[in-house]
Amino acid sequence: MLVPHPDYQDKIKITVLKSAGETASDDSDYRMVGFGDGIGVYAEGDHIVAVINHELKESQSGAFVSKWTLDKKTHQVINGEDLTKEVFFYKKNLPAEAGMSGYEKLNQAVSRLCSADLPAQSALSYTENGNTYGTQEKIFFSGEETNTSYKPPENRNGRAYAHMVSGEYAGTSYELPAMGRMSFENIVLNPYSQKKTIAMLMDDAKNKTYATAWDELSDVEKELIKHNPPSELYVYIGEKQTTGDHPLQRAGLTNGQVYGVRVSDSECAADDAKCRSTPNAEIREEWLTGDQPIAFELRKIDVPINDEDGHLFQIETYKNGITQFLRLEDGAWDPRPGHENEFYFLTTDQLDGNSRLFKLTFNDISQPEQGGVISILINGNPEYGDREETALIMMDNLTVDPWGRILIQEDPGSDPRLAKIWMYDISSGAIKEIAHHNPKYFDRDAGSEDFLTTNEESSGIVQAFDTLGEGWYLLNVQAHAKHQDKAIVQHGQFLKLYVPRDL
Image (cartoon, rainbow, N blue to C red; front, side, top):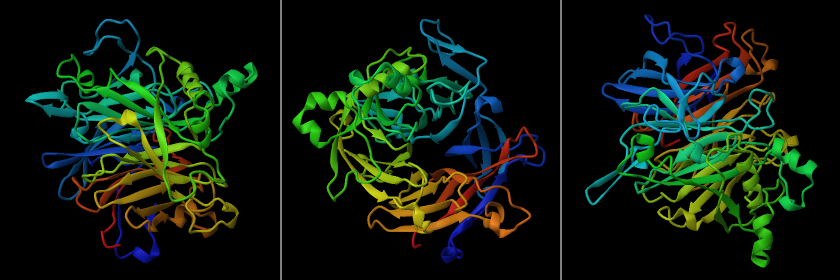
């Protein structure tokens, strides 16, 4: 369903590992379900293991995480199973269950798990003076991409989750209430080993922005915002522990504080009080223009941890003047040594909007509360009426590799233009299209009997240099057309991609 750009057919390799509906192996009944999204990958003995979010709605039986075992040499899939067997939700003042108080196992569906992060072990553990803080267990992070503008039963702000991959609690998932409630695109942990646990939280809500101070809004306007929340960027900061009943407690994932990112503007310098009460917003025409990055600061979002519907979290965000973006999407930290302060993220906006690639540079990742600077690296096509094939539109997912390249996936919805994958070189700023979806399945005008839909996207891309080898990535294709088997939901594929260094 995905093919290399014609200029690089002899260099780029794309291999399908599993298609929706296929069994894990000849002697297995476990099948690949559609709507694959965020991916995590790690090595385990003679095998490679990939864990995958399936972004299903509650009405589609609910989102879940699957686990796929690959042969390390051939990369052939040899086993598949559900990763998560039990989900624990936070309910204040409950006795200890599954290792932590305040949690209860409920027969309740999880919804729309989107992008994901299986961080390096350095993100979760730290050693100082012979003392080990945190945990050595593998934990897969993702959140529900739902908000109050959705139709029931998903008309609630999403929850963050930690999916235990290894250790005593493997196969269990836990809500992370300390990370707030929002329309989670992703939860991405900083890999720099230190006592602090730092995660970027992307709120993929509406691409609508508001500029009126909360206290100046009418009750009708407040209700409108409540049910059409804007999109903001957050930072979670916790502290690793040497003790705790559960790995999540030791990893600093239950004791932290959420901060909102506020980009400075001219009004802030003149009137800080106004700046703190009035939201500022990304705009389509001009924003952060020029070569100089602009400062950002972090502001505490203080709400009760039992803010069950997330309304208080969203209101406090608004009152703090946290910057509203035009639909935040995926993000990733730069994995290269010496680049620990650098985080990249996307905004998708809309077809006739201006999708962007941003860079957030913290002044000091050991003191993230001090803020840093933000800059724009890619401005998408602000004049989509040209329908140029060279324009980047509705950028959605990304990964940053150890060679200093960012691979970016588009999601243009049901637009007839084929969704593409781009490569951005951090040092030079060069941009290349490296792949696009196969017209055979996604171009109605191609006249193929195999045509499925014009609503396609690739998603969940992750660099797999340490497992598959240098230059290799894992990703999914979501073909938003109903599968003939309702249990599979829709068409799609799980793939590996090779992009050489000398492209």
